[in-house]
Length: 444
Image (cartoon, rainbow, N blue to C red; front, side, top):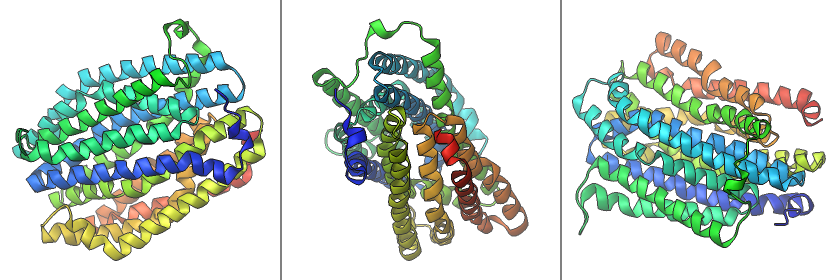
């Protein structure tokens, strides 16, 4: 397959052609997250609380699938840029195998672990029961998730963004359709409650994998074959050198959410619900921003491998601008429609009041976060996983956790939301200084 368009096509149109299909599919994915939570909230507020408490573990499983997929993506795009086709095939084959193993491990470990995990945050048996019912079904599909996201990153690495978009949209749309049918029992479908939400999610992932398999048989971007299972410690090491930091980048929010759930649950369950709703709503911003990054990442990797350093710099600059526009739109929406957004998920007036204030405060940090999000993705495209991890550690651990604890301890739970924007501004300043002083050295 000829991938030279990645270093010849004009940058803005190239980035648009790669990123816009992913932005569209991410928006649909965001809609799925919202719809899923919307229908679960109709069951009860306890069901919504259970979904919020399960989310960190669910996010961690996705983080491993996506993060290791980033390692696969970075190696394939770099090897193709350097004209090492065999190594690109080895990266795809080994990456798929390792991610399947990851999925099996998570299924075996996470399902029996969930009752203990949920018991750390609540003593309400209804919440624990709902969480166990949801997670048992959802985590049974862990291997399917790993296969789906491995294919996604492989197809993205060779520029097949439209095919990735179609696959994701089919999975998400089928999930959205199945949610009310399986949760409430419409027509021939049984009423399954929160278990129906988990099963709808699993079926959506299966449909996505089926589309990828059909596309792979019809049009092979890189080859996944038994003959490429030969031992290659150097390449496998590079997959994990980028994959592990990328996994941590995506998994760190789970650590943050678990920490915040722990301190907020001591005040009121309403704060836990608000946090869960926020993390569903913010996907409407950060998943489209991720779409820009996913379009940018293979382009940066390919051009870096091909020695086109100036194009790498321009790709990064335009991506920051596009993500800044997305975050500006999100800030305006949260300031003008936060009460309406919260009212979609709960009828509890106190929860709506707390959530309205929380969204407005948190949204102050959206615009500066565009710098950090884009820089982290660019570093992954350059196979600089450790440097990318530093940015995520600042955003999710080093700055925000001490700030949240101090604000909560001295000013109460209502003040904890200020930790989000404080963290984003500090991280953006650190990243800006790093780009100014170390960018040229990094690219060399």
